[in-house]
Image (cartoon, rainbow, N blue to C red):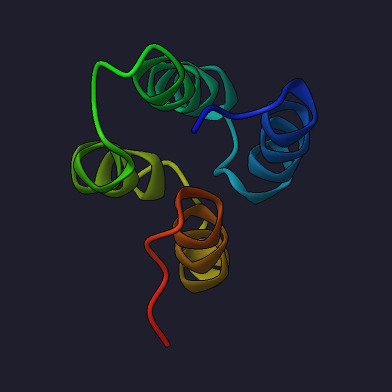
Length: 81
């Protein structure tokens, strides 16, 4: 399964609001790598989650980490309640 442009645009806007000041470009680059890896089927969603979520979260403000992790996991289909 691939992501739609709508998925990508939504998450780019989400990340733009959640990142630490000055980390926007770095966070966007990692998010782009995540989408590319899944869309080109270079990685499974599970592998992409394992590789990219920790790096993305390192750019996110502390108060937004948990919500961002949940949104990423929902997007990737790896969210477990």
